[in-house]
Length: 212
Image (cartoon, rainbow, N blue to C red):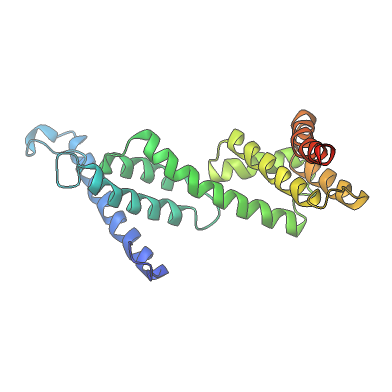
């Protein structure tokens, strides 16, 4: 996984090995919860690397790399299935990752997938011609188990980048305004956010011109 020349097949193999660990963990959990658990060997229960060779910050970086690979694979189809979400939570516990660590990795990858699916929806016209753009975006968040507030922040960032591109030459043409309005409507960006972006970006350009 650390190799710069790693292939898709390498990632697939890693995910297969992690699935074996999860299956083994599930078997131990079933033994722990078995009605005859008292007659089994003591200590049956979920596995964990805590207390072992990987229970250090240096070695934990390797575990984060494996966790990232599993998240990436789970989202490879453009959505997060419930059983994969449960598997990730289980893997987090096995690896002894903190909630914040796991969420940071998941957020990073999910944000990229959200941007990709959003771009596809815009280019295909699916978002623009949907009956309810808000419902379309909400459904996309639900499919990815993505925080709508994080999605809103991405929408704002996309708008600001577009505005900066349009205003780079110091002018906002009628076509630029139409394109920005279209983007605002599609991404359901509130007017106060639009006003703040224009005040910041266009205001800075205006100030620069006046000062010079």
